[in-house]
Image (tube, rainbow, N blue to C red; front, top):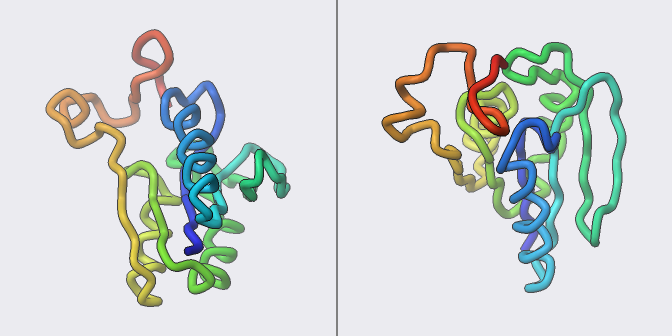
Length: 138
């Protein structure tokens, strides 16, 4: 099985999901699942292999919602190469784009909302997100 994980950021500054993603990917790799991770990064694009997991970093055009047009183009061309797309996060450009393209191209997908649908998350002011050690601006 070939699984693509799409996550807005792997930066430690963005908190828990960036720490959990490598552990999830390694765990799946142990069971023979081929795992690729697509994410965004400031101003660079690069591809790395971290513990047997291919990580593709795509340049951002905006920090707000982590907009990455190169990620959109890549997903449009490659999303059918995967048996499943696992989307991490809900309110980000990469999440919306991955879900839309997976649905359009008939690729099964799941969304891990990362707590934004719980009562606390829903009542946070727009543009703010929990950071390490407290609230912080996006």
